[in-house]
Length: 246
Image 1 (cartoon, rainbow, N blue to C red):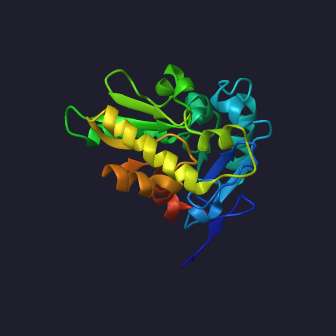
Image 2: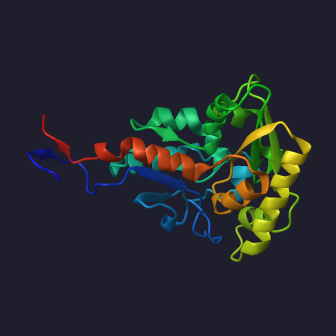
């Protein structure tokens, strides 16, 4: 219960996390961070015009940093407590976006990889499932703080027929059952090819609807962007404004 004198400064209150959205039209089912029903708490969205999925994932998000900075500052101005993005490949802009605002920024679930590695026994690797392994490069790993001392095994969805095609092609229809089967198949291949994987981090923010399926198939801990958003929300929740007057 609020009591005493409080100070304003924003138009709305009660939102912990703001999400910078790509400019898309493909379906976002519950579990996808672009579906507000995914979260049991309010989030605020900001669509970044021109941030085409193929441009961000396959073409290095060239020229998009100013638009994402503007979006981050707009979310900060609306009073969010932290800012994330809805594409893990934007981790290449982690440092620049964090420097542009005064609230915490976590651009990607890939930021979890160093933490997950520390959780594992010696000799275990972190598995990374990504929408497109061919373009997940050194700049993304550097942005996430994943150095050579952190062993990872990366597997991509690009050889499958449904999920990556629909997302990067920004198509209007998604066969959810086919996408689920693809995630299970790729996860199975990951642990078969790399039996020393001790946990999995899902790079793509559209993968969390299939997290339980991957967990059941592999028996491994699976971390995703929803895990990270939920953790940040818990860290911020009780501290949201309006703040008491000192």
